[in-house]
Image (tube, rainbow, N blue to C red; front, side, top):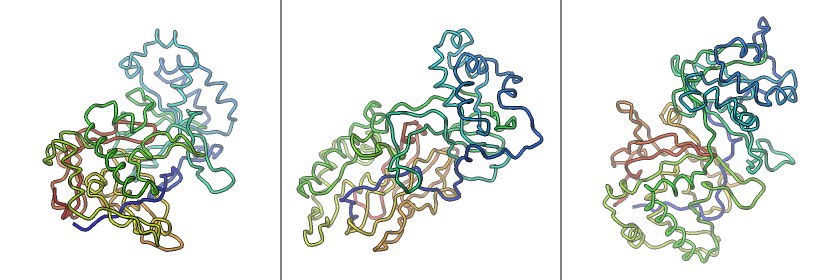
Length: 411
C-alpha cells in the first residue's frame, strides 16, 4: 500500500473557534430579541408555565441573583425539562426541595443558554447549533476564540441543538417537540428529558468501558515504537486531545472519535495486538531525515486505526511548515451525514508553504436508521455505528463494529 505519512512534530489542537460550514454562533448577550410586541420576561413566562418542578428548582436556587448580575439586556434560551422528565430522572418535588441550592444552580445553569435558539428560525439549518450554557468549569481552559492578548478562555459546557421536522434534538438525541415560548429576553424551550453535563474525557470513557482494550494497547505500543524509531524527537501520542492536558495555557480541545471494539478487531482477523503490530514489518519502517528534520514513511498500525480519528493524524513529509489550522470534529450522530460533512474541511490550507486543505475522508450513509461510515473509495464494508453520542467534556464517542480502512490496505 502507499505509505501514509504521520504528523510527527506537534499536533495542532482543535479549537472551538474554528468554524464549521454555515456555522452561526450563539447571539451576543445584549442583542435585542426580534419580538418587540412581547412584554413578558422569561421569568414571567416560566411562572405561568406548567413546569412546576423546574420552577421549584429555580426558586430554591440562586438563579434570580445570577441573572440579575448579568444585566437586563442579557438574553437566554431556557431548556426546561417537563415534570415527567424530572420524575423519570428521580428529581421529584420532594427531592428538589431537599437539594442544596448550589447543586440546583449547576443543574439550571446547564439548562440555560446564552442567546436565542428559535426553532422556527433554524429549520433550514442542516448542522447542529452549538449553544453555550452558563455553566462553566474553572479547571478547564479552551483556546481563545479570537486572536489577541488572551491565549486561553474559560470553558463553558455546550449543548448542541438541531430541529428536524417538528422534533428537537439535543446532543444528537431526541428531546421533544420543537415548540418554543418566546419572551422579551429569550425563549423557553420544553424538553422531555433532564440534560446531564458530561464529566469524563474521551480517554476516560475508553478506559472505563471495557470494550476497547485492544484499541488502547495497540495505540500505546504504536506510540512507543514511533518514539523508538525517531529517538524521541517527534511527538506521536494517541492520547493527545483525548485527555486534559497537564501543561499549557489551555488544556482541552474539541473532538469526537469512532471507537473500535475488541470484537471489531477480531472481525478483521486479529485476535491479539501482537498480530497487528506485525503489520509494521511488511514495509520499511519510518526514519528521520535529519537534513529536513522530518520523518519519512509511516506505520501500518497508524493507518489501521487512523481514520477512526478522522485521519487528521496523517500529514505531509514536512510537518514543520505548511500545515494549516485544524477544525473541530466534535460531531454528534445527527451530523454524521454527507450533507453536513461531505465536503467539510478538516485542516485548512497551510501558510507560508500552502499545502492543500485536507477534506473529509469519510463517507456516510443511513440504512434503516443505522449510520454507516467508511473511508471514501474504500472497497471494505462500511462500519455500523452501534452506539452513538456518549457525551464527554470534549465531544461524543461513537462506537463502530468494523475498522475504517482505506482502499488497498491489506489486512
